[in-house]
Length: 454
Ligand SMILES: Cc1ncc(COP(=O)(O)O)c(C=O)c1O
Image 1 (cartoon, rainbow, N blue to C red):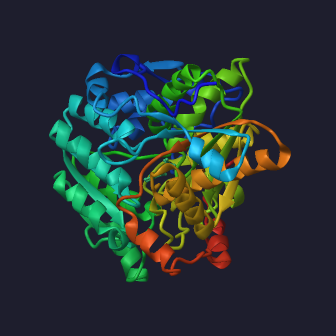
Image 2: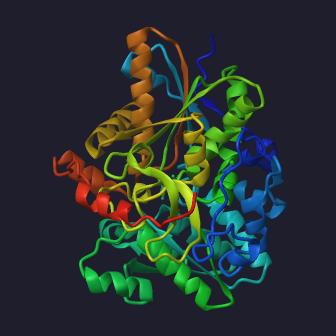
């Protein structure tokens, strides 16, 4: 038996198209609605914020969508990313399971986010846009868009969630080094930000608030558009390059996943790794169990309701049907800033409703314990968000040990934690806590869900 550890594809083997799961869904995705009319929105409603090609992809049901050559040429710098067999982790756990992880920390920004920032910047540039605005949690997405902006000569303005802005100054410095402007959110620079600050001057911010600020800014200028780092169909589409590559790499290993695990903030790295395999299953191919892992302090899939809601706190976006904690819900300030979102991708929510995936929630401390265990075995210290996937994969591997089952586990290690070391310092010093959300805040946010005719 081979003891190979890494499975590498050549640049020529990089996938030339993305996989669109909308083509294979047994039940179509509920459409986004206009908050004023309650009717499905059309491309013109989205035109002030997104370029036309992105809108086309958002509503497409074609199974495959070509990745432009210019985008693939940039991806060559770090893609195809490696797939590792976690042999030392398997040994440390004493599990009969085979654990593989796709590693996205090799991208210049350190995560999977450039898989969508590069194509989004490309399409905006092609349609004459001069400036992009966006939100960011921990700063992974903001730095990925800043990197893409530098490559395509686009100005980038990033609204960074206040708590992360203070926790992760080096992410902010990276965005600025790439040439972006980074503003702490809520900020006094937008109406949405000023409204939040007026009611709570010490607001720690949230992704929902930062999205409102970025969208508000984009609609004010004709040469400015908004780019989203997760949640929407086109973002999950761009991330499927992950699963497409992993499929080829597992073929090299002569293996196929029984279980796929991914962490979910807005659902993009999870959808990216899982959808190509799920598509295979939906077309009558091999079965696979798919597990989404989220923070217990922002438990969208495990505790949220499946309903139409706004994507942002200031109610500037269309209504989408998703698992939500309510658009005004502000999660506590735990370290996985990228997972502090009140909603979930409509596609991920829909497939959970269809029973095609399950979800689990973990507390902060147990995910850091898993991340440190992983780091000591495999040498890579994961981003706090990725620690959720690591914890999920370890738990499945331990279930395999208990049951004596040699299952194949694939998980996405979506980013490294080199800009998150303060969190690891706090963890080592015993200062990191399991922060809970307030039940009263959650109930208030859910009571404010928009009323939409069934
Ligand atoms: C490293 C990392 N992982 C995961 C996420 C969560 O996003 P998504 O669920 O879209 O992959 C983020 C978001 O910023 C992130 O930075």
